[in-house]
Length: 276
Image (cartoon, rainbow, N blue to C red; front, top):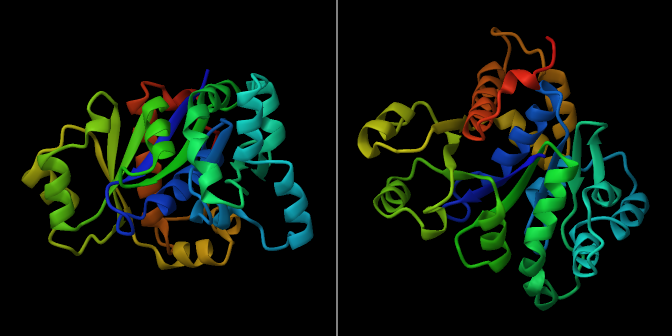
């Protein structure tokens, strides 16, 4: 039985929540003998979805694939009681064959039709646990969306994306959001700048977080890869990056976060580690 991890940003547009998830999912697929699913709960476009699309796919091919896949199909199956782990993979798209799949978002023409999606969050999460070792879902930012709340409620672990914004940090640590009260979670500083006064060590000293704290630095080449839909190529080229090569530090930060996810789930990462 697998685990569902919800990535949630404490404030919209500041924490790099979606890019944190994309980086984590890609490295999990490359470093571990595990089957990973990446998805999101947004109405409309999402970095998670856009970053993993390969440019060489034609628009016609993508439209055909998306018409028979995605969260809308899972909703229909869940409401009819036909959604299982064995059927779920029929409605996802391969990113890294055999190790990472993408769950496309909704194609509903009207946001009002998306409002009730939260009603099927539980069976979708349960089917994902049966089909995948790890399911990473972008639960957006803030607390206004019912589906985001439902995904967090049914997740086994929450990754809380923060930033080096002092007001955001004070707000979060002085009054932890209610939806995290009974949830295991880890913290990650997205778009991290190690030259800032608010380093990881200083954040620990100032706020004494009770949860594990990680960071993912800003990486221009990675963000360009996300924008250009070349994330797959980015990670394949850097899987064995050496210490004296560009992006080595960025890759190490991702690996440290992913190891922390396994630890938070009380899973021995060595069980899944691929041979070097």
